[in-house]
Image (cartoon, rainbow, N blue to C red; front, side):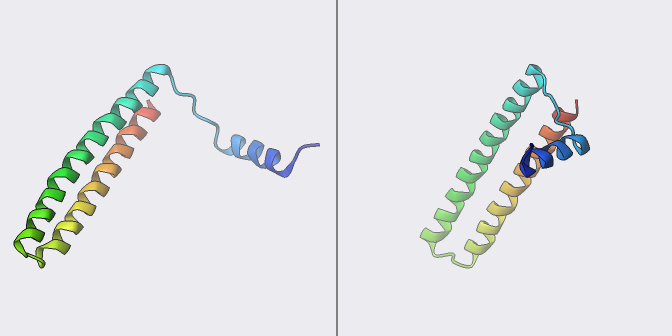
Length: 91
């Protein structure tokens, strides 16, 4: 007798079959991850430096804008990364 979990997993597999990735696709996905991790780290370093400078100069009005910019840019890069990975997954 199958458990409720096993039955649910079977129904899920029927409605959304698992996508099998080739070794080439897996390598490309890893490369995309590495590329975007580097881009995100670069932007974080740059913007953290700007935030630190604004704090030292006492430009407290700029801080929320810089923090929002940092959040926006990192979010955009993550979205771009996911879009690139989805394109790779679809072949």
